[in-house]
Image (cartoon, rainbow, N blue to C red; front, side, top):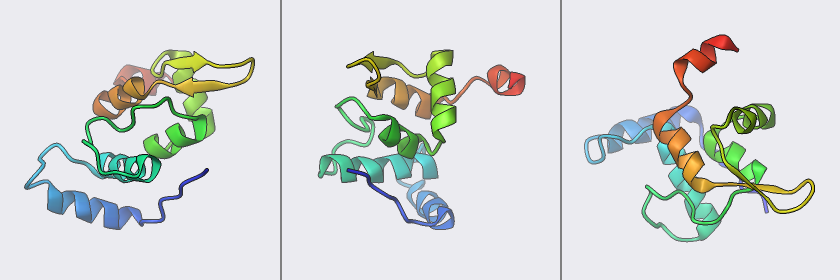
Length: 113
């Protein structure tokens, strides 16, 4: 089941800007993650915990707004933790996704690539 978020980036940025007076740490990326969480879980749970269950690669890419190639780079670099379910089936730990959303990729790593 694939969820698409068809909200233009300018609208997400404007909404995040409006909400910042109430939630100073909110960003457009954080808001997008919260909306995607609502789609996945069907409720408006606390936005700090994006999701409780392990994420598929596609879900993780949508939440982080990255490509599959970047996702695999982040996994191999150790930024995202995975759980191996089968020979070719993995799930991504939501805590590592939240950590990446909160802290981002270290600057020195981005410059080396």
